[in-house]
Image 1 (cartoon, helix red, strand yellow):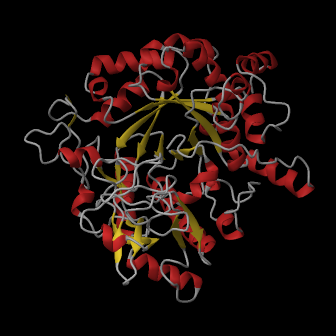
Image 2 (cartoon, helix red, strand yellow):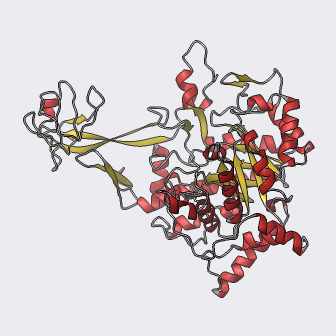
Image 3 (spheres, helix red, strand yellow):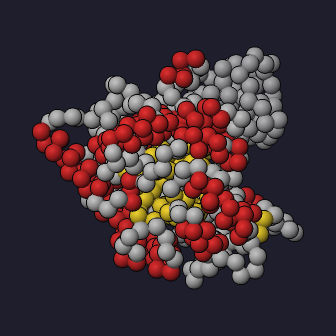
Length: 552
């Protein structure tokens, strides 16, 4: 244990916790021992130029260590599904957007050698359930693509997430259905316009008006040849179930987490890397999740859910439906099995996390196991990822007993969350129109509360949020470190050279990461259990609303 003076100096290097939030046992145990996680993320595709140059890489690692970082995280399986090391199970990523590795170059081996030589711990990250990249797919048919192979998932439609998509439509008087599309001008009007034979509006009662009518508050739409059929019909909702590559609406190509083949594909790579490389840890990146609330609705998943609930399900109304208003805004209408569906998906992710930990620890017992996720815990039920503790005190409506039990924080050695906000503290919001929850401080508090002393929590800060604002980055780092057990900085490619002096100042006193101290998290967990049994030190969940896609 460090001397009292050293501990005091380390505590003074970060600001104090807000007086209205009780420090977690994890925070106190780390602080009292002078421990602090300081992770630097190296994105796999964005940093090829750095990693491909041995001399430059060695200089970089030495600099990172010099300014106080103790760990780097290298992305060895990006969302495209190819790897930054020679794998038996996936194609290698040799170039990306004009950057390339020399022939025969092994990026992971080089990062490990340079990082360890500099005295850094080196962890790897993998995107579990993404096997393709939208931009790479869009460019794949070009004569020369800057991305190369768009990913194996496009060849596996049967493994892709089957997504449920809702669309506004008009149910005509004769029983037909017409999908509502945007007018030819791609213009939605909510302003007074003249009645038109080319467009129609939807009245407040949901009925499509005739050419002579006008509802300025309605949705203006046109579809040549169908307007007369639509007139007098009522707005409704149509749905479609399709593989995630069809009409792909996010950059990663999301696969079906329920599919055993999908799980096994990533786990053989976990085993491969852990057995053949001296990694200090492995983290799953944010694609350890479902595509969204809309996935997965494959036939096999639906059958598994019916077995789980013990009876037939009316698909899809028993899960949820989407209702469109006259202005085509919409809302979700939960069905009778909505909460069970959320818990069912969360159990799937939790069971996979348990399998993953076992695979990693069998291959390399000393390696730390962790997860990165967005800090907006209150929104992650949509993605089936309950990264909190089963005992956390969150009061969200989705926190049913079954969902709560699926919390997988106790399976982790470290939890990293993206607190990606340009505002460091809640106090900073007083001078702006931002919400208190949209801050690094709030994101760190919510993440720590969700973990509830089950694992170490490190708050992530994104460098692009602080471009040209080094003082604000300093405040953000201090807010992150004061409300969790450490900080993760994303990403090296985001102009890190502009911020070396900030890191050197904030991390002036060297520190080990708490997840590297054997057995310490067990002491934290026991302390929390004792306090809970006594009814003492009940750590309330801070109900701070975060941005839905923060750290996503």
